[in-house]
Amino acid sequence: GAAAAQLRQRLENELEDIRGAGTWKSERVIASRQGPHLRLAGSGDGIINFCANNYLGLSSHPEVIRAAVEALEKFGAGLSSVRFICGTQSIHKDLEEKIARFHQREDAILYASCFDANAGIFEALLTPEDAVLSDELNHASIIDGIRLCKANKYRYKHMDMQDLEAKLQEAQKHRLRLVATDGAFSMDGDIAPLREICQLAQKYDALVFIDECHATGFLGPNGRGTDELLGVMDKVTIINSTLGKALGGAAGGYTTGPKPLIDLLRQRSRPYLFSNSLPPAVVGCASKALDLLMESNAIAQSMAAKTQRFRSKMTAAGFTISGKDHPICPVMLGDARLASVMAEDMLKRGIYVIGFSYPVVPKGKARIRVQISAVHSDEDIDRCVDAFTEVGRKHGAL
Ligand code: PLP
Image 1 (cartoon, protein in one colour):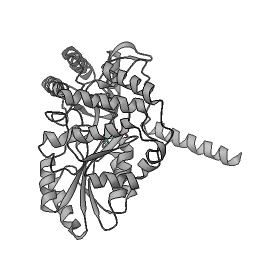
Image 2 (cartoon, rainbow, N blue to C red):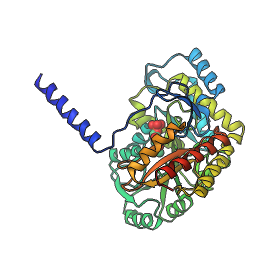
Image 3 (cartoon, protein in one colour):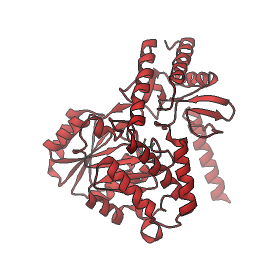
Image 4 (tube, rainbow, N blue to C red):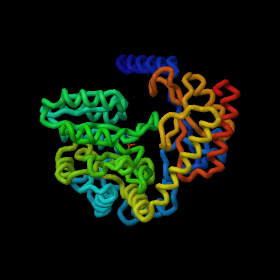
């Protein structure tokens, strides 16, 4: 009685604080499949969606859906087991082999999510004798993964190569140095300077780890990711990425890299050892998405032109778009309330975008994040730019 009542009161106070701080996150309900055009509960049909990570439009691709149904029929709903006890099917091994081939790495290991892949890798790989150097704006899951390991921790300023070099010099006293960075940063749409990072890593005898969640499938001539885009595929040692964004969007994550590392993760990585296998339907989706990408680079390439169209038209209209050459296009507005009312007004015009403000992004740097997908038509993009122009004028943002 008393403890439960006390807990309820404490939770209600905490929720009230979140509302009071204006940082409450509410969830819109989608009443259709994921895609460039949605039905939204409360807003109706024909909403143009600019806020999913569905970069290649594969989330509802007919062949991806068919592959999932076939895998479900043939291999069942799920494994009711972790991988090493009774949870590995041929499709799991096939997908791991395909991921390694896609990234041109020796081997790969699947996880239930990239969050799990990031939670598992640092603890399994690094000891108190080692060091990890992490970009200050890395994704929350990298930060949490690093928290779980006992290595010496260095945080360098966002994409600041002078600071990284200083930290690498400090870290020379440790046995092994691992530089960890997002390949593409999801809040700003900026791309890590991997060429420079790899040069520094070579100079100071360090390894490079990248999180490619916002790059796999569409950055680089064949969609291999940031390492392909910047010509350093042979210099990045470890890649973690997701199957939950461009690669079909169902769920799942992985690590790909040297075989002994992958072997060690299968023995030691806690989110791998103590969590259920990926369900067959999910494996089917990702496997088909990779087939489509390996058959032709046309899908990956279609992304760049769409992104360019949006970025140049918005800039010409007078908006500031953060980042460069990435389908994450943050429309910088500064004021949190402005970002929020503009996003609401955009939805009234049939354009679904989301405003981001503190604490998700720094104070005074509120923005509306637009994400372009290869399956947006030129007309979709132009309608989005027109709506921004109208709404921006109305609220004095232009
Ligand atoms: N890393 C980055 C950079 C991400 O953006 C995300 C997803 O938001 C993750 C990791 C986690 O990926 P998953 O959804 O597969 O857990």
